[in-house]
Image (cartoon, rainbow, N blue to C red; front, side, top):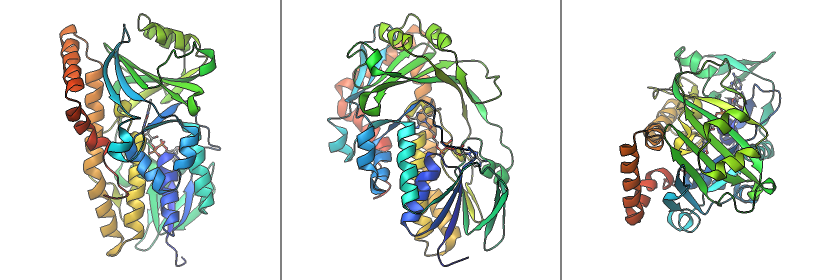
Length: 396
Ligand SMILES: Cc1cc2nc3c(=O)[nH]c(=O)nc-3n(C[C@H](O)[C@H](O)[C@H](O)COP(=O)(O)OP(=O)(O)OC[C@H]3O[C@@H](n4cnc5c(N)ncnc54)[C@H](O)[C@@H]3O)c2cc1C
């Protein structure tokens, strides 16, 4: 091994690539191993709160993100039938002042491309079609097999998502829990829709046992939607399969007419079963550690899963590359810094699912009253958001 710390990363998703950039910028030699033969982000958007934007901005990506993303004016929770706002949180006019960063919606393919280009520019080597199924380690190095080849490094990061093989090698098989939710995702070109059909906001329609999210991506050229429905079981072999547009239309019949109009223009969509796992006791073993969905998958109801992977990446790179008391202490500090926050986010995401899908009329009326109170005492409502968006891991 040479003088430079050599880091192997399994998984070239949002977390793996962000970690690669952060580590390379701190002087590491980085190899990323991605099991897919090529990057193919299927049509879906992603919301990036100010907390994620702080990290991406510190890595020098803000300009490109703003070019390709869309800044929503507000996050609005709506009645599922009338579409009337029940709670509106202003984003554009408030977040920049309050959190020193914006809230941005972007297509995943755009985000991925920006990360990939930045990683290559920093000298990161990305190996495609290179699945990593396990690892071996000694006191001074870690070894993997990726495809046909073997690689040695100083450290290994498992950024290989919810079905992580690195976590499985480290801790044995933990069964994932089906959360009782499925999500359809798709995008529709804006030019196919009547003008201003979808307000330029992060819109969430709340109905019994379901909710529907719609927001702009691609600088406003496309509308992304996520439609979530409760189900008793998930019997499909894969966890993301091509969905039937007729099914999502049927599931949201009788909702705000704007949803029906949007879905009429949808030509294809994908269906996800949403899985969860209890927080892990530890994320690291020797020279190997985990980040993102590999160690703390969460329901998407706070739109913070990728944001947590992005924050993990920055904090891990900082501790690992500035280690002054050995790598064991660096990894302990990483876990100490991150676990309370990611565990809280897993919990808030679950609670949002319960709040969004309330079924009995009485419970829904109670929710409406809660929202009304939050609209009146707006400072208290923003105070609650501070624990999510008010964190800047590049400074804290
Ligand atoms: C419907 C839905 C909506 C969401 N919306 C948002 C949102 O708006 N905002 C937000 O912050 N989060 C959102 N999320 C969550 C977010 O998508 C995830 O938390 C995030 O993608 C996790 O990033 P990751 O890098 O940890 O894992 P992944 O993105 O899953 O990446 C893992 C990578 O590892 C690769 N891989 C897997 N196994 C191997 C192997 N054995 N060897 C090598 N490579 C391997 C995979 O191919 C993949 O490229 C949403 C999730 C869903 C399901």
